[in-house]
Length: 221
Image 1: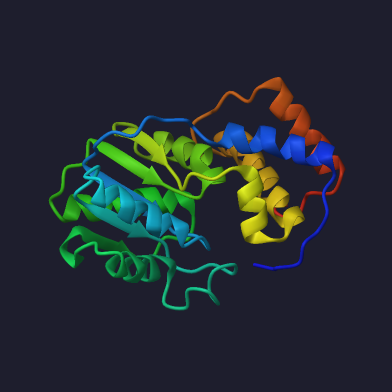
Image 2 (image 1 turned 90 degrees about the horizontal axis):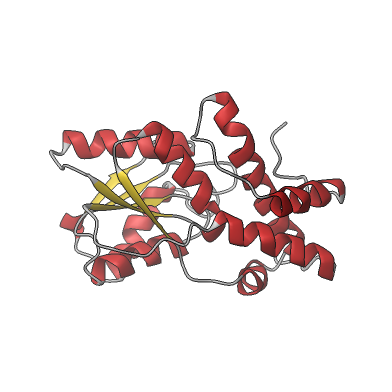
């Protein structure tokens, strides 16, 4: 991630906060059969998954993800492999961790994790889905479509938009990512990739105005 700080206006920050809040599902955490950590550039996903394990909320972990253009330099051995290594340093025992190293998108994250668990003889009726904070809703919608008979609780590192902006540094890139994920929440059901989600009018307006303002680097072509 770039560390260059790019200024966004107060109005744009408020619009981004609406989308940030919408992306998070607000689920209450409860014990589940398995925690699935979805690979990305964000090592906080692995940390959060490890914390959930130590809290007794899941006895089995699956880390899923290969490489992408945005993660190859950071995680050269693959997202899931690096997540596993990080979780081991946080005290999660090796026997509790399963690695799915091939997924290249969210649908594959879910489908391949489901298949891995089936082949391992692990019955998963409830899943803690661990993602970046702004990816909760898209991951939830994808799982509802790909694995409809499982109960899902979404979890992420607890962060405000402001703290995430400061952690990443490049404010415009963060807003681009929020806008890009919302576009996928809207468009993917039409393509058969995810279950439909209600998008409130104020969130739709914020999205349209941010797109008009040029926050478009993560939009689908």
